[in-house]
Image (cartoon, rainbow, N blue to C red; front, side):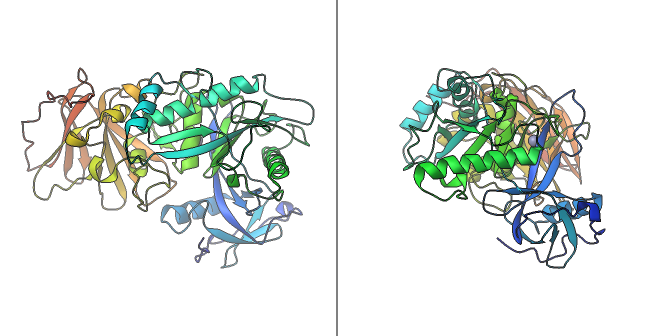
Length: 497
Ligand SMILES: [Zn+2]
């Protein structure tokens, strides 16, 4: 909780009088970002990311930043001076100022959270594996899904039972948030529907993990007002049950909360949205790919841009524009995101990462010669063996900050429904110190192909073998004067039980 010491917004085009509404913004609040998911084919959203301020009581105030202010904020976030969800800023009435006194405008108040679903025939295997494992580091996370009815009776058509199944797989749904997070993490990240102990919601829930709430306003209000009304009502319902204050945060009861709305009537074009601390969702709640994308934001992952330079178009990664369909979503993450999902805390990792930091991730150093790595696709991470571990992601430190990441994008297992660069070696660029800035896919190579990394390095996919379980690739990174060894043939399967 550091107070921002630099001038948050250098200039400040003073706040226009028209923005100065009477607002109930607190004197100090936590800066946060909300990432919106554009519905393909609908009118483009004005902003891919919205900024806001969390006063700590559960309410979230959108911030209206002009272009220069946005750039300034993004720059501070990029160089680590601002951490969304952590850094605090000072607020005075309708304006928000940093310690240096430059104003920006704020709107109303609010805060949120939300969630959704996906398929996996592999969940039994994963949970069995989890049961067998001793000293498991598995992270168990409790989720609540609030099924919202507005003041005029609008509520999603799906029954609470269907919703519970679509998100948590409580009645046989094949692909959902629970199954896919378990699949991508090889059982290291487990979604549990319901409140965490000791909070017993059995007489509050309308289906496992699902609680119905009724708003005091209609869905025709602004996105922020609807979000705040939903948060407030959810807090009220939980507080009444457990004798807490109405302002007690929902995170007291569960790790993550999601809200399902019947539809969007104002500020639309989004399928779902999330802040770093949680997300919120429309009628797209049942789609596993969207659940994964939004929960990725909850964890702290930014978007994944594609070859065309656009924000969401890396389709090798759930943080691109995801798959749209109830049982679509068997896709994990690109190597920059995998890097963020290591379980050891580093400045670049998210809080609840699960991948084995020391044995699966490598920073490439060619100072003593070319480097060859046997790599496994993240979709088959559950086949990773202690005795013969393969690399999951490589990082190449690039002077100037745009580091490069390499992975084998095997389209198997948890990554079966991947739709770009199947079974190829992918190269992604991301500034490791930049927190919430998007990554960008730079290219991919097939067996025998070489990609020019720049700064004197190339990467070659020496061999790729998808007939093994797991599939394996050998990847060589070298300087131009160096030679790749020829003894990596991708023929030796890893042994697994
Ligand atoms: Zn997003």
